[in-house]
Each structure stands twice: as C-alpha cells, then as structure tokens.
Length: 488
Image (cartoon, rainbow, N blue to C red):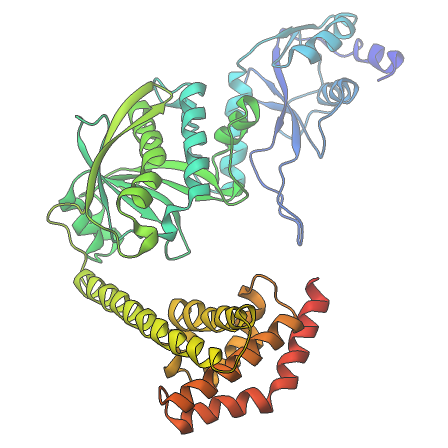
C-alpha cells in the first residue's frame, strides 16, 4: 500500500473500537474437479462488538503488504453487516512477524497494532463460518481435551503411522478381537483391528465383552444408542479430519503415513454423539497401536494362517514413558458365529497343502530319475526340476492353480497350464521373459510325458496338457514378448 493511500485512512472517523485480525487456512475444503482438495487462506478482521468487518479469501499466504490492504479495505468498505466505514483504535494480530511489519505504519494513522496469541472473536467467527459451510457442529481438536498436550498427540500420531504401515488387518479381521490391558494391571478393554474387508481401517475399542457381542449381533445402530459407547481410531483422508487437528498438525509437525492414513480418534457416547478421547484414552491407543502388530504376527502367527491362541505382556514406550501392556487372544467366551466353520476350513486347506506338497515331492523324484535315464547332464536335470517345481509348488499348491484349490501337479488340467503360462508366470517369476517361458514349457512337456509314461497320470489327461503346450506354444511366446517389451 502506498503511503498516500495509507494517509487517506487517517481521514476516516476513528472510533474507540478494538479489532482482531488474522491470516488462517479456511475451515472448509475447495474440491475442484480432477484436482486434490485444498484449503485456501482467509484474511479475517473482526470487531470485538461481534461484527466481521473484512473477509478476503486468497490462494497463497499473503504478504504483509497484502494484509495491510485487506485491513484498509475493512476500514473503507466493511462487508455487509460489518458496520460503517471507520478507523479502529487498536488492532490485535496473532502473527508476530505481521505485527513487526505493520505496527509502525498503522501507528502513523493513529492505530495501535499489537500481538495477541489468542483472538477469541476471530476464533468464534471462524467456527461460525465452518458451521455455515459444512452444515454441522465442528468436532473440536484433540488439544481441547483436558490434559492433552502436543507431546501426547505426537506420540499417538507416530504410533498410528507405524500401525498403518504395518497393516495388521492383512492378517486379522474384526471378528477376532483381542483383550488388551494397559498398563498390564489396568482395566480390561477389547480391541478389534479394522480393515480386512478393505473399507474402514483402524482400531476399535470396546468396554466389555458383552457390549462387543451386542455390536457384533447385527442390531441396527439406532438400537444401540443410549445403551453402548465405544472408542475408535480410524484412518481416512485429510478432508475427514477436524480443522483444529489439521491446524495443529501444521503447527507441531505431527506425522501421517499417507494420503489415506490421517488418524481420527473419536469416542461415541451413549447419546450417539462423537466426542474426543481424553489423555488416558489416547495413551491407551498409542500403546495398543504399537503392540498389536507385533502380537498379531509374532504371537498369533496370523500371517501364516488362522490366528493361534496366545497371551503375552510386552513393553512399549509411549508419550508417558515406558510401560507394560497385556494382550490375550481369543477373548474368553467370545466367538463370532461361523468362526468354528472358518477354523475347520483353514485346517482342511492346510491338510490339502501338506498332502499336495508330499505328492509333488514323489512326482519330482520320479521325474528326476526319468531324466537321468536320458543321459542328460546334472545341470540340465536341475534346470528342468526347478522349472517344474515352480509350477507344481508355487502355482498349483500355494496359489491353488486356476481353481484356487491346492492340488498336486498330476491333477492339473489344461486351464491350469494356460493360466500359468499366459498370465501367472509373467507376474510372479523372478525373471519373466520369452526365453524363460520357453524353458518352462520345455520342462513341462518333459514332465507330463514322464507322468504319462510312468503311469502317475491318466494318459488321456496328460495328452490334453501336452496338446495345449504344443498348440498354443506360439501364443504363449508372443504374450511373453509383448509383456517383456512393455515392462523392461
């Protein structure tokens, strides 16, 4: 602003009035098509009589000169409802750098400009703007809860980021709750890992096993209001976060693991309303988020199949220091309907895998002896054995073949061979190429010729596979060449 323009403000009527002015991110999202959402800045000026004198939305952080222009505009042409044009006696600003830049210039026209950390009228105006734009009651920030400090929230965010990266929901779902006591001699709670279904990710905490059973019973949510309460930390996008938390994240540098990993801790009251957890709740979640991934993999061994029963006490370091946490699975007396069926199905599949691998060992032993009788070198025999083993064990047993059911290689059919060569091999082999594919086809031709000759497979079924390998050979090679050109 030029000095002569500033001098013109001195001719405005001065009133004994105090204003508050700030530059902040808007408490609303701009969501343009095909672009990420963003929050522009707003220069807001509010009189302590409750009227908003000036409001200007800008895309980038304004310079001190731009801020001064916005103040001048609020004095010369207040917005609708902001009163008549006038010059205040005092303006409080919550940015020390802006105060340093503007105070001498405003002093020239008789306005005192001072720093003030909390601008209550500005805060009230910002909340009113948020309510107007979002049509709902704002969720307060975590730091509004008694006893919650930036250090406590930082510990929670770090634990949440670690939990998200560990992705324990890959191995366990919410039908397998875990009893958790933190500290280890504290109250029993029941934690459920959310995310196995691919929709909602996070950690839910229930107060009692009975309440948890009622929630899992399938009762409509409106029937639970007034009877139950629970607490959760769910992951979501930045637009799902309370604006207080986002502003504090910028201020204190709390970490987030990714675009979909913004942590939102909420307590659902018996009235069905969301509330922010207190300090002890946040410390509990920090400890649980740190301990559960280790418990799920190292003790339940859930990454290797159905979770095994286990209990242990681990040591964790939270924002409150080092302490112990007790974890136990399964929850005594809690069993989700169909869980017994799942256990039986898992055990049946494990038995299938074991039997199929044993049969493959027998078939490969026969194949190696058959190759040896053809006077092939040890290196050539080993190559054929490795190629067939990849098909027999990695694809037919571990993957389940085209039917997704573990089977030995002598129970393969043309569809298994076709899917293996045209798709699976190219995505799963260590060195997928037309050359390695040709080598695998040659090994498979020898293998099924061996099974036919030795009687380990019906002649007609072996011939179907051999015909597929012969008839579609050029198609498989061409597919591999195209894949190689696109990816390497």
